Length: 594
Image 1 (cartoon, rainbow, N blue to C red):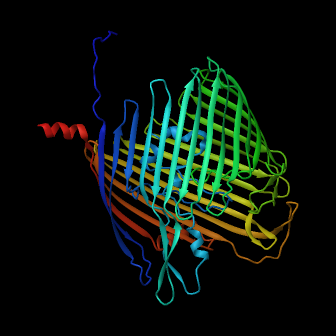
Image 2 (image 1 turned 180 degrees about the vertical axis):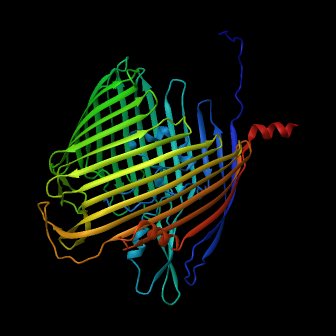
Image 3 (image 1 turned 135 degrees about the horizontal axis):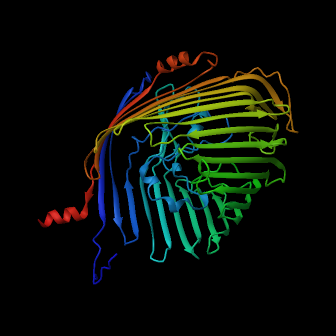
């Protein structure tokens, strides 16, 4: 290759662009309630701004953002004591946010999520009052992110977002209305510093802060993530740590919590091993801006792996790992579980990939989360499961993913669970791709929380069934014109067989409880979006969204009858048009001179 010399005094042009948008929505839902319109319209407008601050740093800003055309979430019936974590699909929060993921403290779905006091409205109504409006999302007013790396590799990131105050509207029997604040004006902020060193090592510092107006409540989390490895990247130590602080205007003393995780071992080569020690205090809470299912845990983890990276015999590669985990509570120091897990994944020379996971919990485990009450626990029996998935060559016109698994509980529970899924992918042409996903999951004699009665906790033995169908189709009419269609139906039934009282020792005792908590839950969604990119960076999106959510006690009817009942239920339909136009400053400047 030749060398180009003599180039100097080159001044980079200003990198500045604007993407204003306007959108119009028509929503229809058959409320059929006085003072509530079945049809409503919304007109929105806003803008995205991108500014190059230097050769390495870029500022991205969104003002009065509209995410109404983003794909619907896969809503499920949640029987667990933990919050459901949804994937981020909003483009502003998926692009250029890798730096903010350090120490696992950033969950972007908190921004614009359900108001923190949304559900409290239902439990604080006065006699004769009804809810006219209770928004399920907070409105994002603006968000800004600045990120980049200097010439010596130092990474810097700044993220800020503000959501508007959210109110529910209540009406009494006389027609008088009042508003209840479900979430005040909220400011979200992240600062990240990341520095690589010694070729294969780095250290990061991160701080997240959430401030709630009208009360002065604040949540602050400071953390670090690091990796130190030798020059050959053969051996290393890595980890993360964080301290959380919760402060409100009434209690000036912050509630402190901490976490850490440290891993040390051999990180390269065919044979790898690692020892991992982690700790979550009972007061560690990053969930104002992060996501954590549960705290109050200590874990010791030993990982052994032997991998084949080069082709041999009929395989392109193969990965094998054994994991041994011991868990206990942080406070008090009580044993919770001991787990063994083996995973083998291999890709054959015909590009078929097979993954098998075998799990075994040989001892009774103490579940401190299912009872939903501090200090109480439920003893779960030893269990094992095996799960196998296969994925064929995606380069072919017809490909598929398949998954099958079975779980068996031993001892007093006698729980069985069987699940399987199939996902065929058909590339009809270079312009037309169709995928279909089917999932069946059936649990027999599962045990789970029902409710609490004074000092008594009711546990139910139940059969749980889940069926999910997802149809996806994408058609490209032209390089700038496309149509996407997605339909999803999720059905879950819960049939309770017996009810028990949970004793203080974690075992169950018979109970004459007569409540009916059987449940049949349906979620049906359609997302169809037509996109026309009429100029570079500019496009028109026309979207139709349909949503049906139902709950009843019909747990014994067949699937086809349940689906018919769902389709005849009230449904929300939304049609929207969004116009986004890309404006480049250099292009405007050039044309203005002409």
